[in-house]
Length: 161
Image (cartoon, rainbow, N blue to C red):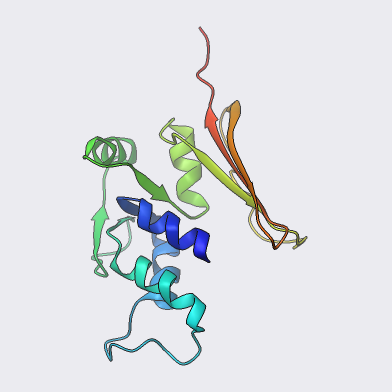
């Protein structure tokens, strides 16, 4: 959780699709009472506070509006994300399953970060399933956690003509 808290804080903004936005909002938005819910453990609160106050962009063709420090992204995804990437700062953090695939297909992901957990789930969505073309990656950083999880960060290798 400390790692993800730092990652959220490092990002200039978060970029979510509708499903991820709604899931994160339902779990991590601070209640109107101003107090975090009883189910939340003390060690989760720094993450909750960080994601709650983070600027968010939500890609959706079905939502009519968003709040929770968020702006709705509509229209041509590639054009909209290129504009966001030109804003000053260190970068956007993208989460989810469908949106990263769409961004990878148009070459708009500068770094990929994968965390391998020491758990075999046996079900669930396949990451980047349906990618149109193979993307060669180079490892730029690796970190092992006490839990046994391993984080690997990769950058796409530019295709040679």
